[in-house]
Image (cartoon, rainbow, N blue to C red; front, side):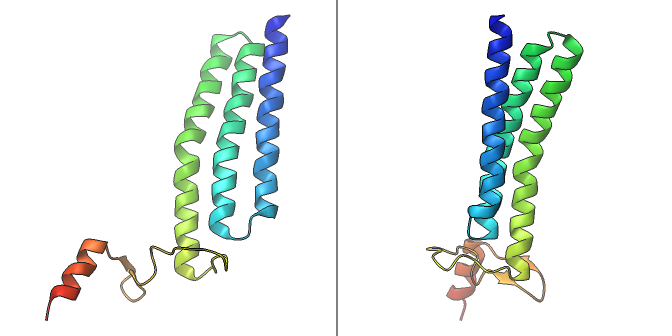
Length: 128
């Protein structure tokens, strides 16, 4: 009985975070903040739902699959968000007009598609 209540709490909490992730897509002003909101809340929500599933179905097969889902989403979601955000930046998706700092500005060579490191840029400036 208490396990069922605990499983339900995990599932409801996970559903709440998934809802927050979906609201982040609509409410955030630009691509990078949308990716941040969906990645963080989505991974946490999926993890909580999988915890609830593991508690509800007390079975080693279900637990193993739920752990695999948790590991897969934890590893791939941030990497995918980073790749999508970087691609969006490089193709020219506009940043939010209230963005304070753009650390990639001036570091991307559009001809060679190379992102220069700050050390490399300093070396270029020091040369005559």
